[in-house]
Structure formats: structure tokens, C-alpha cells
Length: 163
Image (tube, rainbow, N blue to C red; front, side, top):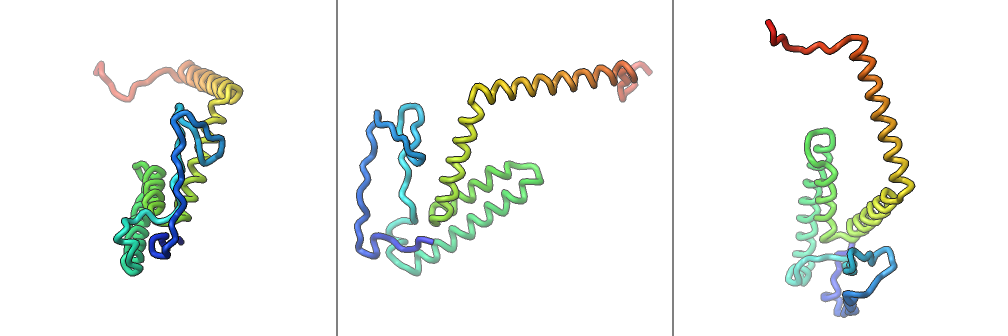
């Protein structure tokens, strides 16, 4: 875990120049979304400077962030079998952890990269065509099975309106 700060050690972090509006980045970390380049944030703590200045205060801050993130992730895990947006809440808890812990930032970057790759694979014309064909075949099979059931047993409503 990265509890140390560049400010405390006296080391000045190198300044990164923001890419221009027309720059295109081909790396995995520099995705381009609709003409605007996304910039990856540096890894490490995002706590305010006055908190980073004191080791004790920073450690307390990290414990607080960890406990809050753990509560949110636990709530998301509970929501997986129960009604609620379980995965969304779990990723929210990971985002809370990522404000302070490098390992969580790396997990979120990996997850974002995998989701982007999956979305691009799903938009591949061959995959879309295959998915549409499989969906149509499945719907035809279901329609045939429902038709056979109705032909054999008829439609019986669970309520009796005419009595």
C-alpha cells in the first residue's frame, strides 16, 4: 500500500503534460473516447495535503477509507443474491478504496480494460450476427413449444370471469 507521499519525502513528482484535444493515444491506459483523450491518473493516495502531512492522520484516513469501502463492498456482496445493484455497489466500494490504495486502483484499471475489450468484441459484426441468429433460433424454438402446449392443452385462464 502506498502510504507515503511525495510531499513528505521532499521529492517532487514529475509534471505530466496533458495531451492536446487532437492527440490520439494508442496505449491501453490512454484510451480515446469520441475525440477526447482520457488521461490516466497517477497511482497513490488522493487524500488532501494537510492529511498527508501527518503520518498519524494519514494512517487514520486510510483506516477510515478502508472501513467505508469494506462496508460498501459487503453491502454489494449481500445484494448479489438479493434485489439490488450488487455489482455496481461492489465497484463503488472498489472506487472508494481506489482513492487511497494502489492495489484497488490497479484492479479498477484492469476491470475497465477488460470491460472495454468485451464491449469491442461484442460490437464485432461476426459476433453480432452470430448472437442475432442464436436469439432468433431460440425464440422460434420457444414459440414452437408454446404452440404445441396450447394446441395440446388449450388456454385455461386461472380466473373465472363468466361465472
